[in-house]
Amino acid sequence: MSYSCYIFGEVELSKFVRANDAASQIVEGYAGVAVPYVDSHFHLHKFEASRAALRRVLPTLGVTRFGNVQSIYIRKAIRTFAFWYGPIWRSRIRRSFTTTDHFYMPPVSCEGNWDTLLLERPAKESAGSVEVAVHPGSGDSWRSVQRSAVLRFAEAAKARGHELVGWRQI
Image (cartoon, rainbow, N blue to C red):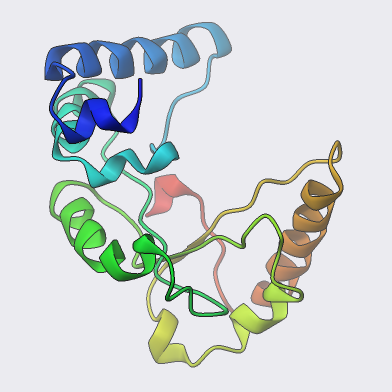
């Protein structure tokens, strides 16, 4: 399915609802994993049809939490669409779901020592809860870099008195 399908309303809401419902049931049924939250890959949160479908499906699965839109940047990404429209998307997500106050994800190219820089930000810029998302792993060098950085970040955050919680505590 392409973005144009959502932009131009070519996808019926019921089809989107069935697809989301089926995916969640597969995860819970076969893997035995209870889904604590959903995030928005491919930025589907931008589209009202996606949010409407998720508002219908997620409560039936006991899921009320939804990942936020990036609000913290180490380097301001002023040339990106998401930087300017993020506040609108965040407010729409907050109206429908439980979510974090802020969200940060380093770009794949990484931002050097983001783990240190994120903790040095003024408290007012990241007051409340902050979701930090990475793509850790060991197969690709950039995944290894992100895995190492998030482990350093977690240790430094705990050392500074921050509480690390999972989505079930949000």
